[in-house]
Length: 181
View 1 (cartoon, rainbow, N blue to C red):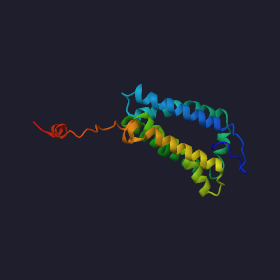
View 2: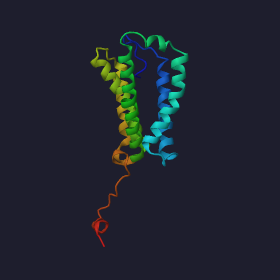
View 3: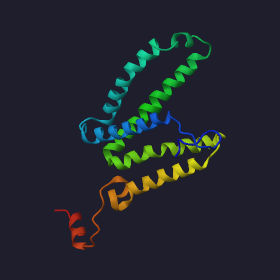
């Protein structure tokens, strides 16, 4: 629904939005690989390896596929370059370390719910910046929030993605769990 709203409020499917959908599939694969296949690696290690793997083709493209060297010589370019580096290092790498740590602490359903909220935040930031808000945006955001709620409701996977607690009222079991010696 979020990708069908055109600039004038009509219905128009944005083909580039399929790239966002492909990224969502990659997020899902990433979460499951981190949670179930590479549990012995620390979040910082996972982040470092993944960013290094992405840096190689990105660097090749930067120098071979763009006019980077010409652009970096323009006045004010160094400030822009430093700003991008700070955003990449602190923003992206820092967020990935935290994200990989959250994957380790919770289950994949809870962790992926955070990424489902990205379109909601993006639309709201667009509205704050003066972009129009259409019916498709509202319906799409409602669908996302309802889906996140269904995926994380307490009876399904526990509070905040943690295993559900034993709901029995057996007080002797509770007391024995806290006895020492």
